[in-house]
Image (tube, rainbow, N blue to C red; front, side, top):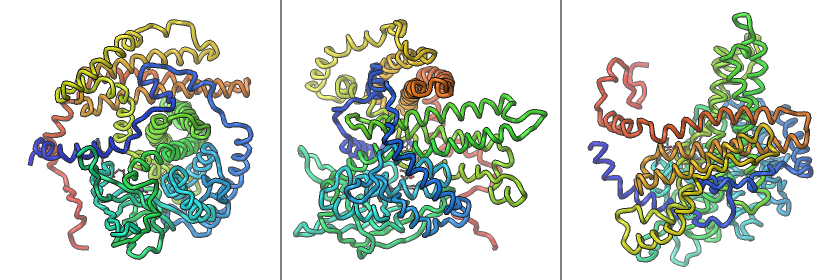
Length: 630
Ligand SMILES: Cc1cc2nc3c(=O)[nH]c(=O)nc-3n(C[C@H](O)[C@H](O)[C@H](O)COP(=O)(O)OP(=O)(O)OC[C@H]3O[C@@H](n4cnc5c(N)ncnc54)[C@H](O)[C@@H]3O)c2cc1C
């Protein structure tokens, strides 16, 4: 079957996947969002300034806890040993429990630490800067595992039962992925059937890559439940169940071994007629996917915090090594090629923190819709930290590629750059791949336009819908569109920003250009825009850069108010913005000038074997492993 035939064959499944994803979306925008406004060309500086720095009281709580956590890690956790053995020692798990780390986000009323989102993220960043595996243990438990959905959607009885367990050190996991279900939950095969009296549900299926799953005391398990008829149409249901360890029928099939974060307990779990009481349903029947998405809005902030923590470590190593290592008569950090890497690391780390902690502060404050800000933070920071670790490896040269133990054995400093690299890469895959983040952000960014005008542009839409869309569009677009062309960037604004004012003006102007470009693409492609993933990705990247620029500037200004002598934040915000402006221009250019269509054709030909001749002269890997003599 050719790629074109496969595409036709898949279109029904694709529609089903889109329907399920749409069904799980939060449809309303009742709370403000800086980024959602940005995509509409509205630069709402009031939503981003003054930058919400951590309050002194909350900071004091955090500082005290971080001090104890850091001391514990230094004294008890050898990250190279953890990586080498692939195991997190029980005494470390117990020690973390004693510190309250498994209950960082559990409210104090239930015996947890009740940390703010900012302090929780600071803790994860601290751990991630030191040991990626341990950070993932903690975050899989708290960001997507049971505590977070329980906090948001749990019944009182569920909270009373499970929160105190976690506060004492019980570990949890989140099981969504299956062999056929990665980015696309509509294809879920795991099923839960209700008993005839409705008191219990029986789960059957396989879950793949469930982090902490092999050791978890409690798991959230996603399963398909019987479809419902909604407006005469069958609607797939996915439901979230709390499943306790030791429930008969849970089989731990195998532990997975990964390139990095080698000590995570991640595996294949089989559910063979696993019976759970109906009071273990979280939120409600059919609400599972929505629960997962809403949980991830906040949960996703852990990854950018961890990425920023790793980036700080990389910066620290890079600047020391940049000074220390002399080649061709100069420290390598003074050669321009090295200098740009170190400078970019510092600027990018500042921006990563600015966007992540801005969004975390919104979580603590409440009253804001953070779905776009959190997704952008995840996208930006996981990619930026990967680039930073890659640059660090380059700066370290051969030593970057050598294991820390090996470096120490021959008397050198054992910076664990290769471990950092192995640990960092996964962040661009879990909790939404880069590509899925692009699609998710684009969908949300286009929401207002889709509500107003999509039916108008859709040739298949019925006439009544077209007329309604026409009426709504006629009221909205003329004024809105004209407004996106107003040269408001020329008006004197942002006086309080000093040298950063020009960057804020750039964000303002480009947000309007972004909004009209998005609109132009929508008019050009109509509903087919959905398929132009690379155009959407560029527009999402522009929005992300603008968000990072704006938070960097507002944070720098706020930090400067606290300490006027310290010019570092302003310098880094300025540098980041200058670099981001170049990228923004390139992305805009790429919207019209690209090879996307040719790329798709070439990829289809490649997949149909059209370039097989290019693969001659290799020992082809068919994935079945070594078959010769041992
Ligand atoms: C170490 C590790 C820990 C994990 N922990 C957990 C966990 O605790 N719980 C859990 O449930 N899962 C977990 N996962 C699963 C993880 O969330 C998935 O790997 C991730 O969602 C991607 O799914 P996939 O690997 O099947 O990739 P696929 O969905 O098969 O995607 C493969 C590639 O295709 C791209 N792609 C997919 N769909 C589209 C599309 N529509 N348009 C464009 N590109 C597309 C993806 O971006 C990716 O690049 C873990 C995975 C790993 C490796």
